[in-house]
Length: 168
Ligand SMILES: [Zn+2]
Image 1 (cartoon, protein in one colour):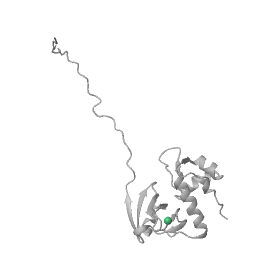
Image 2: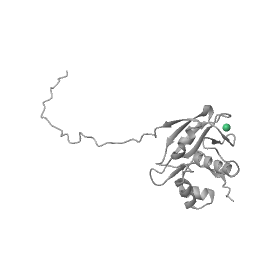
Image 3: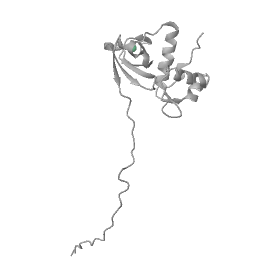
Image 4: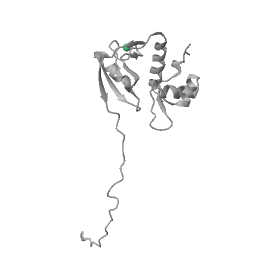
């Protein structure tokens, strides 16, 4: 019997770390890590601590509840507005790679226009593409600060004589 987690405790605009998610849901930290590693819960794992957006957590908990009763088709997303699984509007969705194995599928709800998110495994992408049109988005570019190649430039100090401008 799957435990029902209190999704109403999660604030959509907040960002949580793993520990805070465990606290809010009254579950073990390892449980949260397992969800992330399984690609079920979307998280920024590019640096420590791992960060989970409240809206992703809400979507995950919503989808999790749905899974207990309704099996979500690979190309369906769970709409938080309708509280129902929906096929993305126009049979179109975007896919953004998030980890080497997983990415985020984003589409619009055809009924209420809400943005729907779902974490999918990359290996499942082809099955999804058989049903709907998926545009693969480039992951948001990271700002790379390069060392200035001109850092060896020596500042020449020339003994310049300044032309004096006499005023008055
Ligand atoms: Zn909807």
